[in-house]
Image (cartoon, rainbow, N blue to C red):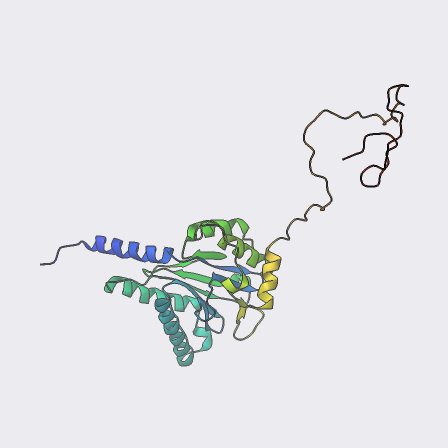
Length: 290
């Protein structure tokens, strides 16, 4: 006879296993800006994408095990295509896809021995900012509506707290990217503070101005430009000929300097020097400066 384990303990063990697997990665960020929705994910690979297109105005972002969320992405694309073909393209919405993902992940979490170590965000850009939708789906099938912004995967709590301090409605693309980059670079997201380069980031947007296929990746020169705008210019260095701070000593007299008094007769100091001072300077009987 196998050992008895209560269903509650089994679910707790599954949830803890999935959380630990997801926390080993790095967080991703999705947020609204004036022209649409921005998605930013640390990803050094140029072939294995964390952010992808699902349908005309819908995008998908995920963290966790690549093979698991890639299977979910392909299944979501198939679901969206079939729904749009059978009914109408306007019937394909982020809410419907998020509910389908929630049912799929909930079934896997309950029925299978090993849960999926993934977290998913499904975002849809609307005609106006009020119509934008962002949904977060966790490994156990829970789905939440996230207005404005969401950080998921990795150390999501620290990244979300940093993003909350910088997020504001109606930001431009450069301002939204700067806020996302600052939140992802927090020390809580995988250890020490990280300064990401263009090769280490995957960035995509849902552009509200486009009528069809709003998904667009940002890379190359445009991404480099956003990075320069997001990071302040370094402070100017002091000029090289600036004198260093002098060590503390007795205060110098503040009055105007007076010429030295002539030496007393017979003191032996009224004789001219025998040669020029070092450096070609003749001080007229004084001690040369060294």
